[in-house]
Length: 295
Image 1 (cartoon, one colour):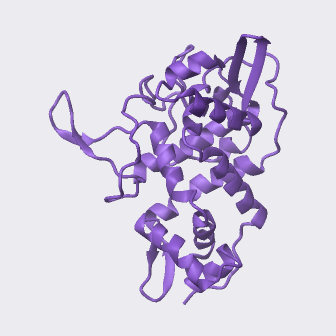
Image 2 (image 1 turned 180 degrees about the vertical axis):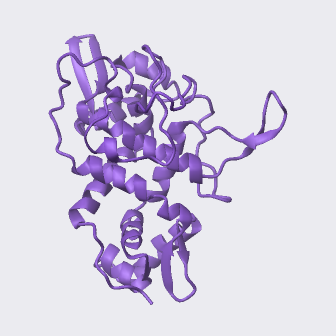
C-alpha cells in the first residue's frame, strides 16, 4: 500500500536540481569543466586536450558554461583569452566527485585483461565518462522528479507518482519514464502495484544532496578573489565540506598538470593520474546496461 506522506523536499529544491542537471547534461560539458579546473587555459590549449571536439562543439560548450556562470572568460588582449572556473564553477567540482563515485560504484564495467598479469579485471572508466553515463540515467524528462518522490516516500503507486512527479500528465504518462527507470535498474516494482528505489537508486541520495546543496547555495560574484591561485578547484567551502561522498574523492595533481582533475580531498586520498580523463577511447554511446545501468 502506497504511503501518502508528503515529500520533505520543496518544489524549489527539485527545480534547482533539475536546472543544475540541465547545466551539466549537454555532452562534453563535464569534460570541458574538468579540463579548465586546474588552471585557466586558452582556447587552443583546451582544444588540444579535447582533440575529438570540433570548433562547432567546443565553442558552444564554452559559451554555455560561461553564460551559466561556472566558467569565466578573461580577455587580456584581442588574441589572448583564457577560460577558467568561476567561484561557482570551483564549488561544483566536489559535486562532480560525488557523481563520479556513484558511477564508478554502480555502473557496469566490462572485464578486460590486465596487461601485466593477464588476469581479467573490471575496465578502468575515466571519471568524466562515469559522470556522463550517470547523468544519462537521471537527466531524462521526469526521471529525477520520480526518483526524488520515491526517495522521500519509500514506495508509491504509479497513480501517486503521476500526481506528484508529473502533474497534468495523467496516469498513463508516468509509465514510460517508470519503465525506463526500472530497465536502468534504479527503480523496482514491488509486485503489489507499487514502486520503490533499488539499492543503486537509493545510493543516488548523496548525488542529489550534493547537487541540491550547490544549486541552493548563495551565488557569489563570478570574479575570483584576489590572491587566489591558479587552481580554484582546490578550495572547498560551504556545504561541500559536510557533504560526504561514497568513495574518497581523488586529489588534485600538484603543479600545472595538462590533465584536468576533480576536487581536493584529505592528503591520504588516492590521486587521479594525469591520464585518467583521457585514457580510454570515447564511445559513440555509453555501454548498454548489463548488470548495472550504463547508457
